[in-house]
Every structure is written in C-alpha cells, then in structure tokens.
Length: 427
Picture 1 (tube, rainbow, N blue to C red):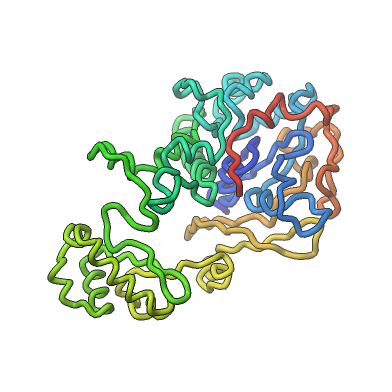
Picture 2: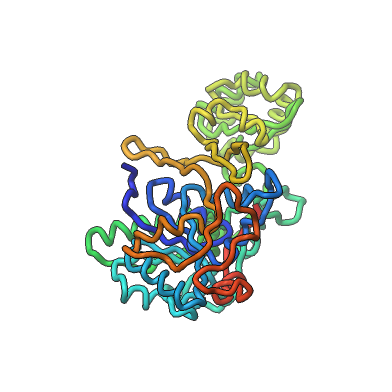
C-alpha cells in the first residue's frame, strides 16, 4: 500500500505547475483523474514526439504519468453534472485557472464545499486567490517567465556584466507545484483530525519570493540590492565555479576542514593559518580566487575532483547526457522508463525524488491518452459517465478526440479556461 492509497484527486490543471503537483500525489498512490476540456490539455501538442501519430509528446508525458484521463465539457449540462458527481466522492480538487473562472462555471469552491464539506480544494494561480487576500494583480495572467521577472529571481541570475536572466528550468511552475502538494497534504491531515476540508491557495509569485529567501534577508539586514554573481556566493568563499582543461568544476570549500584540504591540494598549506575562518577568506576573495583558478585551469575536471577527493566538496559541471550515464542516477531510480503510445519505443522521464522506507512512491507507467479512462472512472460515482468516444491508447493521435457529453468542440475551453489558465513554463 502506498502512502496516499485511497485518496481521490480531481486534477483540472493544465500545462506544468499543476500537473507536477498532482503527479507527486499520483506517485504516492493517489487516484488522480485528469479532467480535461474538449481537445485536452494544450501541452499534449507540444514536442518532442517520437512519431507523427503520438497522442502526446515528451512535455505531457513527463508530468502526467500514473493519472487517468476524462474529457468533459463543463459548458455542457450533462458533463457538468457528471463532474459534480465526481466532486461528491473526491478528497482533493486541484485547478490552476485564473481567479473566478470556476465560479463563472457555477463550480466555485463555496458551491463544491456545500456538496462535499471534506473537500480539499487547491488553487494554483499566478498571484493568489481573493479568498486568502485580494490583490490588484489577480486578474493578470502569469507564467514562469513573468514571476521570475517580478520576484527578483532574474535580477540575481547570470554573470555580473550580463543582463538579468531567467533560470533555464521552469522553477516558477515546478516549485509552486511542489509547495501546493505540501499544502494539500497538510489540509488532508487537518481533515483527518476534524473532518473539515479547506481552500489551499498557492501563488506562483509568492512561491518565487519564498525561493528568494536569501535576497529578502540580505536587503532587510543591509538595505542593499543583491546583484548577479555568476556561480559565486555573496557570503561564502570558496564557493564558485572554475574552468578546467576540458570544462568546469564547482568547489564548495566552506568549512575549515574543507579549506585546509584545499590549501594542501593547491600547494598553499600556509593559507590555512593566513585565512583561518570564513570571514577572512571572504575578505580575501579577490586574492585567493585567481590562485585556485590557475590550479584548476591546468587540469582536467577529473583530475581536479580526484585531487580533492572526498575531503573537499567538488563536482564537474555536466550535461544531461552525462547525467544519463551516471550509475548513481539509475541506482536511485531517477530515470523512470515509460511506454509511448503510438510507438514501440520506451522513453525515460525524471523519477520520483521522494524515497520512503515503508510506503515508497511508485511512479505510474505512462501518461494517459485523452479520455482513455471514461469507463474506469464511472464507478467513482456508482454510476456511469455521459457517453463519449474514448481514444484508443494504442492508436490515438493528436487532435482526433471528439468532445463528449454533447459538448461542442468548437465551443472551446471550459468557459475561457485556456485563456485563463496560469502556470505554463517553457520546458
């Protein structure tokens, strides 16, 4: 039995942050039903693909494993009633539309709570929900790039002479999704004690400010605006990247023991006494760094790491192909193999970073084809779903699934949900 076995989750999220949140729950055993609008989550059509007939690409596969798919047009009375039947028996609902979208469909938190008082309703938005504090920005759409810019993440990322630069990965989505999962688990624990559900609000902007904890306390304590330092640390040294003959390494010799071992390795044992503590080393950064850089520049990355051994934290800067070749990554099951519908080839996505001794997460086999599980989801409601044409998981292709429950595919997107969704990222 997994830690969340028996927990039923309605996943109405799209794109990246919300699906990542619900994937974490699915990995831990929750029964996650991805409720998709006619045509499905828009990132089903985002590459890369293995073939022309793939029902989805790598983007969708990576963050939707282990879920079931149900296609509903919430502008259809029949589909809306079917959705409410699912809500009645759900433990958790997660959505990432703009504030007010669900209410405009007659499916706001207050109505759903009346039907299911124990429901944990989680919202992931760019700038939060008025239920936890109204702000002027809550009508604005938001994506990873937007919140990285607003929160100051870009201001401190990059080399000193470069313009502000976004972090290459979709941290505004992924970190927010992970925090939302934490909030959901906290709300489920509260419900276990009290029987009471609640509204869980996790904003992308809030999450990025939380991630920027260092710049917040630096500005509060000093009044200064931290700038870009490349791979260096503002208050720790040596803690930086250094060029080698064949690439780059990072060295993090912040403890006195690390510093002593580094001094011995580079042939400067006297520096242990000259710069005996972290403040002395930080003050002498401009003198010490060139000496370390000259030492690493004359060696390969392997030679540098070999010389420092286990006495000094050190690592080569690698690309993803080198990560795939790392035995430890496989031993830790961090490359999860899944099938790709429409292809006889198996592919790999990132595994679960959560390891547990008694109830270990078990990532699902693959992401679902659109509306693949209509017949399976029916028992949730002790009845059946409205008639629909589920896509064959072995032959389904992008853009071929019809709307269901009498919905009109041309009518679009859950009451403007495509335009109102937040949290996309660019990965």
